[in-house]
Image 1 (cartoon, one colour):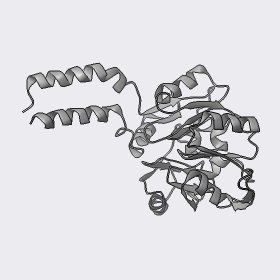
Image 2 (cartoon, helix red, strand yellow):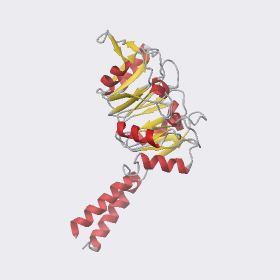
Image 3 (cartoon, one colour):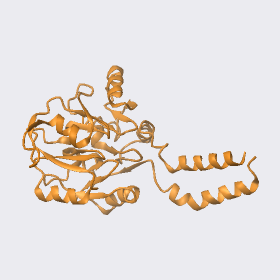
Length: 282
């Protein structure tokens, strides 16, 4: 049986750890310069987070408060624009950027990201890679019309399909797909290794097919008070999410549920602490 002294010990531990355990929200609402499409101006993975230059300190501090102790938060432009989330695709293994990315930007990214992350610039006519590719650390969905390309590196100076580059750099299996009839798969879904949110008009049959390909549960939904452009309104990894400030409480609840953010949160840690203490004294 759990004694009173052990309960006191547990309570003291929780009290001491409480500020750090509960300082994080599961899904954080914010905006970029009065724009709720935060996914346009950021790219979040399990290894790094990119944020657009020219934002407010409040925008940056929100990301840094949640992430800086775990992964680097890197301010950057891509192709001399701030719409970095729509121009790149990436995961913990790599980052793909369009051929319009400048040499200076490419070097900055390579210097700032973890050593194991491969940064690759590719020549693809569909240069808004974030609109055309959706991925987690294992699987990628790709625009059905991705071209044959010539990569821009010295090592890979031969013709290679963009699909093959995605597979090689990101370390994923690639499937050319549509979502609710839309070819811009990167715009109409957000996926992690734990779940995914897709266009609200996605049929049950398509949900089942996509879920089978991705091997994660999927839910059809919206962000930013009914927006169907999921990836423009949010960015997510395996333990946290950021969404536009117009996102409703119901939409946030769906996000937290499908991406299993509650299970990745400190409250779950307290539950495990309590369970282990009780088990140890039964």
